[in-house]
Length: 99
Image (cartoon, rainbow, N blue to C red; front, side, top):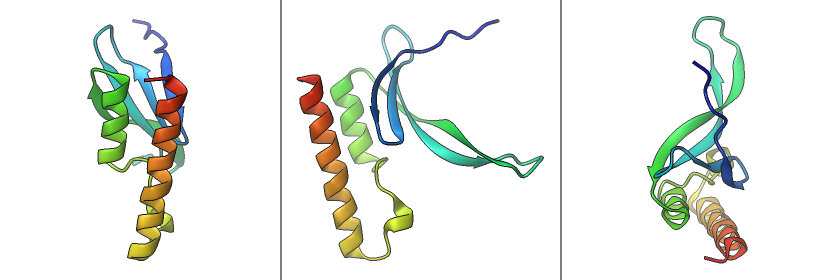
């Protein structure tokens, strides 16, 4: 059985929203994944949740902090800076979609 290519509706950095089926959108993040058998590390889109609308997907991305780079966070000040940058990216995406 051949899997259909799913339409990407929105991409922000390493997070994307795709049309999962006619009623649902899927939220995915590009992450490093280690193969348990070979030990090789590859980048792969990992499922993070579903949404019924683009606005709901943006809210889920914010709530789950999917745009925050935890490797750059080592104290509260850096975390707050990452949250602010994440929120700005989401606002720009929302404005770009004219929601």
